[in-house]
Image (tube, rainbow, N blue to C red; front, side):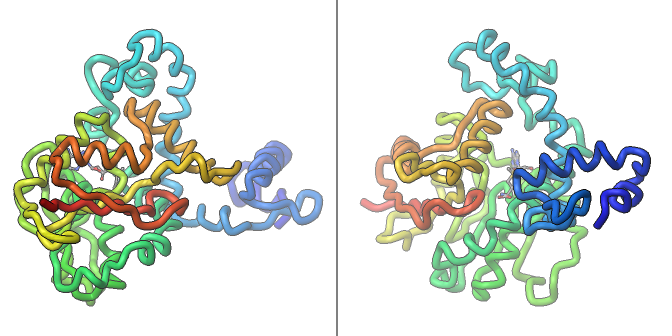
Length: 320
Ligand SMILES: C[S@@+](CC[C@H](N)C(=O)[O-])C[C@H]1O[C@@H](n2cnc3c(N)ncnc32)[C@H](O)[C@@H]1O
């Protein structure tokens, strides 16, 4: 499509030359391509921007773009800190010492809504990997609790390929309120329930499997140990997870395998975690150590490697 037509449709008809400059930069990142001078076409990546939820994730970045310059200031003000109230986000937003990014988000419902939609949009590219990386069907007629599961987008995808599994998706009151309005496809009704639960308190539901996806990477080590211990009362010892198991879906750092730019997404998200929450992505060894700190009987193994956003799975269970 010619840039003049794109500019007209984007409601900036007098600025088509400026718009072309933007699209040329994006084309260098495989988002749109210039097929002939001033004619642009979609690529696989730019096509994903037609998804409103994915765009919502990008909209949340407007806040992140503002905080970047405060990175050095935050390090000077709070050297060596892993406290989320002392992050670059907190310093750049002027809430440092009082609020973390998550606490700020809870006070800003529109941002929280976009973030939650954005998690679904940005996770979509990882779904195919997530479905195949772990033998979900082998869990049989089990109950899986999706902790901090947002509006249930991950549970819904797993449900498609593991028809015997049932799900309880837990999140904060605002997210559960918006999720309960969603019309579930007929085959999922009765298999997915939503529940308000604060993951800093002890898990109220007994289940076979507890899933944490994109939760641990937002928190410092001692907080992750606390999240694990909040589920511990429901786990018994048993070979290979027969007494219950925890699944963690994250991007697991394997630096020695990386060749540029294969770790680009992981390195970028690691920077985001560091600046937003004062946390980071971890290696298998670091996660294993956290489980063993929570309880020395934990065994941990990894499924998958080098996939898209948070589609590696760690499986942890208790064994004598
Ligand atoms: C990064 S998102 C991950 C969402 C989803 N698990 C995924 O993989 O796309 C973190 C989720 O944790 C939720 N959350 C934050 N604090 C929470 C709390 N104290 N208790 C329960 N959920 C919480 C957020 O509302 C959000 O849905």
